[in-house]
Image (cartoon, rainbow, N blue to C red):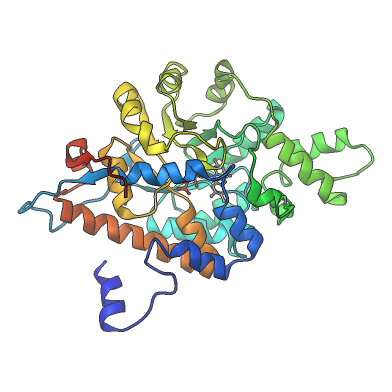
Length: 391
Ligand code: FNR
C-alpha cells in the first residue's frame, strides 16, 4: 500500500488502471472492444440483480474502533487447511481471450505471484494443462460447468486432478444460459472466440462424442462453428442436475467440493447433507436470474444456518477492499473477485489485472486497520451495523 501511495504522491506516476472503483468500468469501456466490454459488463435482463448486489453492500456500515494494535495487520487466510496470503480468490471467468491476448495464462501467472487461488473456468479459452503450467507452483482450483454426459464430466475431472487443481467448484446456477441482452444485441456467442485452445476442444471425451454425433465431420477442427455450439450445449444443457447426482462428483474427486450459486438457506443445508465441503454464496454477478436477491443480503442467514458445518465463500458485487472486509465480517471465509480484474485485464493485460488486485489488497489491508481489525479472525459481524439509508 505504501508503494502505491509513494508512486502516485511522490514519484508522480499515474497508475495505468484507475484506482477509483467508480471509474474502472468506464475506463474499461474506452479500452476494450465493444464485444469484450459487453460480455464483461453485461448482466441478465435489466441488470436489476447487479444493482441489488451493490445496494446490499451499501447497507452495511462499519463502526470503527480506535487505539487498537492494528499497525501490522495479518490478512493471511486458511481455507480447507491451506493458508493463503489473503482472503481473495480469482473468480472463475470464461473465455478470457475475449478481454486480452494474455487470457487465462496471464491471469493464472499473476494469481500465483499474489498467492491467490486461480479458479479456472470450464469455459476457459485455454486448456487445463496449459493453465496448470502457467500457474506453476501457485494454488489453483477448478470450476465445473457440469455436462450432462458423464463421460465428459469424468474426463474433465481427471485432467484437472492430474494437473493438481486442488478444489472443485461446481457452478449450479448456469445449467441454462439466461436472458443476456448485452450479448444478444451484439449477436455474439462469446464461446466462439479462441475456442481452439479451449478446455472442451482439447478434451478427448468431447472430441469423441462430437465425432460420433457428427459423422460428417472427421474432427472438431473441421467445423469449429458446429463444435463450439456443441461444446456450449454440453456446458449449458438446459437440463438441471439433481442433488443425488452430486454423488458422482463426490466419488470421482478426492479434494474438497464447493457448490457455487447458493442463495437459499435450505440449499445450503442440502449441500451439507450431500457431503459437500463448501458453498459460494453467489448470484453469478447478476448474470443469471435477473431479479434475484442481492448476494450479500442472504450471506448472514446462510452463515448462521451452516457456517459451522461447511466453508462459506462469497462473491457478486465485490468492488473494493472494504467490500471484502464486509463479506468477511458477515461470515464469509474467502471472497472471489470477478469483474474488477477483468476490467484491469481488458485495459492493460495481466499487468492491469494485477494492478487492480493489488489495489484491492492494499485497500483491504489499510481499511482493516482503520476499522480497528487486526486479522481475519477479527472480522466479526459486530463491526458492522445495518443502516437502511442506502447510498
Ligand atoms: C462470470 N462468472 C462465471 N462463473 C462461473 O462459475 N464460470 C464462468 O465461466 C463464469 N464466467 C463469467 C464471465 C464473466 C465475464 C463474468 C463477469 C462472470 C461469474 C463469476 O465467477 C462471479 O460469480 C461473478 O463475476 C461475481 O460478480 P461480480 O463481483 O464480478 O459482479
